[in-house]
Amino acid sequence: MATPSEIATAAGATRRIVAVTFRDITERRRNEERLAFLAAHDPLTGVLSRLAFVDRLETLLANDAERDLGLPLFAIDLGRFRRANELFGHSFGDRVAREAARRLGELAPLALGRIGGDSFALARRGVLGPDEIEAYGATLIERLTAPYEFEGRRVVLSALIGATN
Image (cartoon, rainbow, N blue to C red; front, side):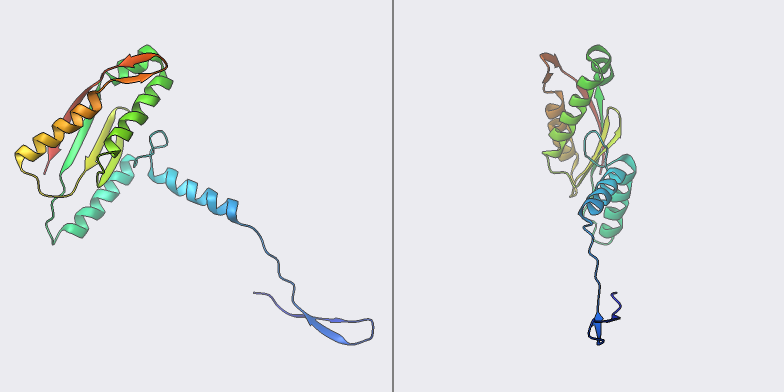
């Protein structure tokens, strides 16, 4: 809050003035937003971090407890990912991880997190029967096992899916 001050003029009169200082905090806000994002997201893929994913699940479960809307959960492990990383280098492996996250994100999950180097978890809405869970798991496998091509190199991964309803 600005406090008025009195100053004397050359004619001997007093005047009240208020000095106000403005600071552009745009950069500070941008940095705060970036830190908040990095605290909750995997820096490589941009999806939720393991801890943020668990927090999101707890929130979803607490909010849906009375309505029983269902929250199917899929655990995904990419097979051959480490081997591709070793053969083609970490830069290539990073691109594969980003692409896998992008492919999973296209399915518009309720929550998507990177749980480990080659592991993701995905939650979606709705009560699914065994056939629906199997079909969705097959969709996940189909998307994740399509070839990854970068820098003139091609790799095909396998995917192992676990699911709970």
